Image (cartoon, rainbow, N blue to C red):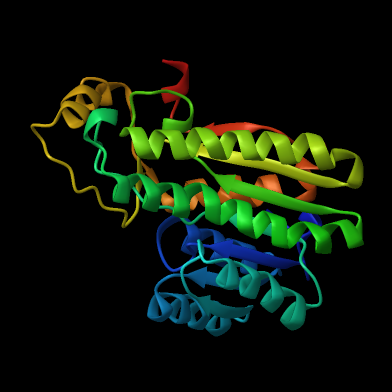
Length: 255
């Protein structure tokens, strides 16, 4: 990606940017000249990524907090506007895994938390970002869904529902705002080397069932590969792409 991507000098928010795909995306945006708000629930991790970016000559600030909290979501967007003069790109990447539990085994607490982080938080951030993008007449939103957004055999009930919901949100925003110059797309990662953890009962119906399909996953990606797809979808190189859910999964979606 070169500076002809149109991202040089742009204001970008990346959530879940303290580690994994988010960290890789924040670094790649900074490398092409974007100014990055590094948002993460882990304050130390967010600060560390900002230090990496600034040490390399880039520009970044950190915001820490639970993104499913309306006040935090609004603070993230307000920080981009106040620090960088607006908001050009929103990357809703933050997410948590479930316990792979089947529907009959999901607790209320797990359901509520997974949906809050994986679906409500992207909605809150998108809603907060849209007025600023509308004022500019352009903007790009990129969401991190999952292979679990494309099938029912890659995670538990809560995670699968949350990621299917995020696909719906992505497509709705794409349709509602395409005439206003705002694009919304998503990547659907397959297996990727990140710090996300799964606390699953290996004898449960969910893990036992999902395990049957893992052989189709193929090569595990690194975070940089997923980040490259995010930066592409945010760039001018993807200027006529909106409403797309892009599998970045070594062909798993094709199996």
